[in-house]
Amino acid sequence: MNTTASRPTSRQIRSATREASLAIGLLTALSLCTGANAASKTYTLDADFDLGILSGVNHTGPNNNQLQLNTTGTTFPVMWIANAGEDSVSKFDTNANIELARYRTWFGPAGQAGHINHLGNAYSGPAPSRTAVDINGNAYVLNRWFANRKPVLLKLLSEGFIDRNGNGIMDTSTGAVALPMADTNGNGEIDDNEITDERIAWAVQVGDQNGLGRSLCIGTDGNLWVGMFNTQRYYKYSSVDGSLLAGPVQTTPTAGQPNSGAWQPYGCLIDKNGVLWSASLGGPLGKITNTASNTGPYTVASFPGGMYGIALGNDKVYTGSNNRVFDPATNTSAAIAGLTVSSAGIVVDGSGNIIAGTDTVQKVSPAGVTLWTAPLQAGGAYSVGIQVDANNDIFQIGYGSNRVHKYRGSDGAPLGTFPVGSVPYTYSDAAGFAARNSTTPTGTWTVTHDGGAAGAAWDRINWTDSVPAGSAVIVQYRSADLAANLPALPYQTASKNVPFTASGRFIQVLTRLNANTSNDSPLLYDLTISAKITACDVDLDGDVDTTDLALIRAGIGKTPTAGDPRDANGDGLIDARDVRACTFKCTRANCAAN
Image 1: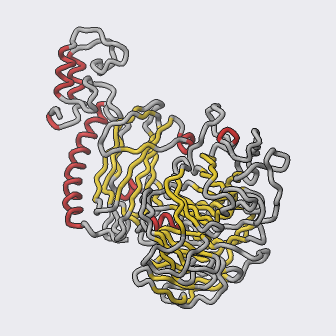
Image 2: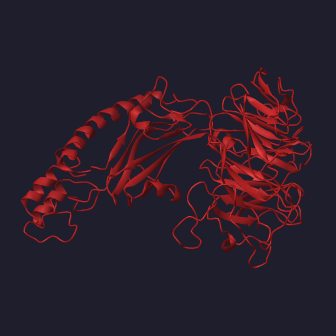
Image 3: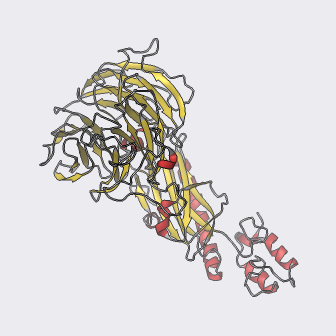
């Protein structure tokens, strides 16, 4: 990741920031002595950034005391495995190697109205098989449907919940047992009031009747593209509510474009330029441009050899089964150098290495050097799908064993096999690795600050950054009196140094760094969380200055109301002592008005 593109400007910003930080530090020291802004906090040094969780970002190298994106890709420590033989999705912790939760994608278990019994059969009924994870960690799953119905698309929240029963708590599954769900009105659809697990945000029918949904991927705008195998069409849907945004887009190539024929979608990924690349089952490699648009036009092309699985990395497209690599810069393809195994699944890791396999798993460098080869672990069976986790370890999806098989990324050493649901069938972007490294190169820093008292009022967040054109720094926050309640709350987006209203002893701030299409990383130099000033700020403009002092003087002798900001010392009087106390709480030099 390029982190030096704007260096001259960055140095100027950094120098100014340090001078400003010194002034702020002196003022803060005075404020702490007088009790003002006791809950505020500035993060600017490496030790400050280490108070939070760094995911895909770092403060190492020649430019420390700042955050930038990693050069080696990573993702969330969670994988979402579609269990095709039981219509569920397993949320799997890739560090602890345990199933955190299981969610239904259709009605069940047996005995619930609307349940379709096809246990152990991946080619009957709803049969989910494609999952995709966005850059916020939310997961989407597509039920293919083998019963002449429209496919069903669902959104699963990584954090937060939909309080459908109004009880104020999150009703959701834990472990391997999913909450029941029934077709209470018998209409053969998942209605919102039938969803019992409050991590499931929505479920919608998509595409065509008997379309057979076999392709699902996330675009640069965060929305979803869904491919119909039988009708050879793609549709675009909102990731917010599942509403239709565009389509159908036929897979027949546009006149004048490379044309190896229309294709049947069988898995897709979208690159950083918004180009959708589609695998097919023994057919061509498909291409659709301009996917960030909801209106098109969409240019469609196809090239020889799409085959089975698909992966992005090194600015190229890799396909499984035929073990080919396609270069979009030249529209040419070649055999993947050094790759010799059968490959139902294929993926590219954070260093650009290619990993593939069906039984035996092989890892090769972009230059074709075999880094390791590992046989299927004991207890395994025919596997579909390869995933890379947050540590760049490898997971093989054990279609025939109802398990996932883990290998150490550095040398292929077996790390164990772990149970999930019936017939796991997932070779899509089940951990969000492609979304976070190829579609929208991104990383986050998340920090939780203790305000010291229940009901602490928060005013604003300010930060200093350097943002190359096309990149972004996005800051979000949420607050609660109990830190344990934070993950169930949605984030709100902050604008730089703009006041907002939030309260709670703990405030959690998530800062996201997004690279541009040239892989230039934005830089974050510092971030300040400011508590709301409740005393002395008489005009309620977020600071204390000569205007506020004048208003306090004008009120001398008057009786304050409850919480009156003019009564700085809280003694029930407005007098000269309040003026004096507020003078020490001025937020700018010489108490200058803004």
